[in-house]
Length: 423
Ligand code: AMP
Ligand code: MG
Image (cartoon, rainbow, N blue to C red; front, top):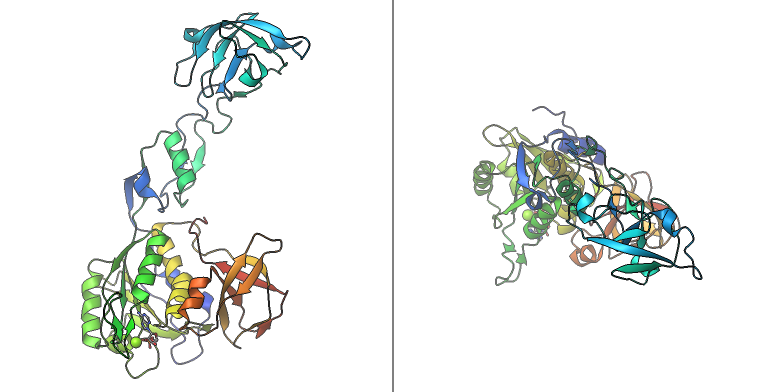
């Protein structure tokens, strides 16, 4: 697989260039057939065609009485119409002649979803009647076709109801089930291995000594992987030992489709990932013109060079933002989604915002989309170690390279951080 690399030492790469590299290295994975519930969060690998219409037969939209609309033409408050009830039909019954035929002056008691009996052209809701059993009094007139759900008004047999690349969520499951599918063909979920590097890291819940910190990234990244629809494999953190890191990643490459590490990719003396891949030509270290998250590594690992690798910076906010921008679109490409980049939302800045020159700045904040126009409220500071601010944010406000500030009330593009349901 070949990519044109840049940004090593020289000019930083743009976010768009690095995103294009990430997505360009990813391929949709093989087809698998899954029971509907197991397919949640995956994407369809082929168009789905309806074998039958929806509704598949004319049926009642109400609990009431199926009748001939002309029989109740004169029904009104002073002039009620009395009809003989000749049958009963509930949802699940075959309908037709078995539930009684509606002749002039008669009707059939009907429940929501039940087939419309022969001879009837409308349903009056039970609320417009005295709810009689042998005879019923109808107090209001209705038009022909009232409260009848017509066969095929939702979907016609042979229609493409869902396109390849559509995410399977609750509403898609409802449609797939309705057209008779118990299983569905989707792209296999990528297995994404997540590893933190850093000799200062301690497994969360363990004893922490001075100078040590809890490993936040591998859990945060594994959570983001699971939310994306992929399968997370989490390894406990690795120490800053290049040989250990290189060997561990080599072993992981045998079972993963994607490997994501955090830490050890910048300019420090112990940048372990950089050292680990010093004599390996499948991984490149680049600088991306963004804040947070400037240093990035990307490449292919494994004997066949078919395992996508992301080396994210170690600061928790940098790692989280880098995942959103680069890893998530690559995972979605592997899942076969037709839409891989999160859509921006336009909002107004709630206060004056500052940003670094020459870099895209991703500011943590809260998007309030319940007002028009939507408002972006910054949360916490800009430091990439400020985990609490990140936890209070539900969105990133994006300030382009050439801007150094956004005035209160000015327009800002915002990337929501929650929900994977777009596309
Ligand atoms: P690095 O990119 O390895 O130089 O790390 C940058 C900063 O992020 C340092 O302060 C690290 O201690 C911190 N850091 C690295 N990995 C993690 C992690 N897994 N969880 C929390 N903080 C981390
Ligand atoms: Mg480190």
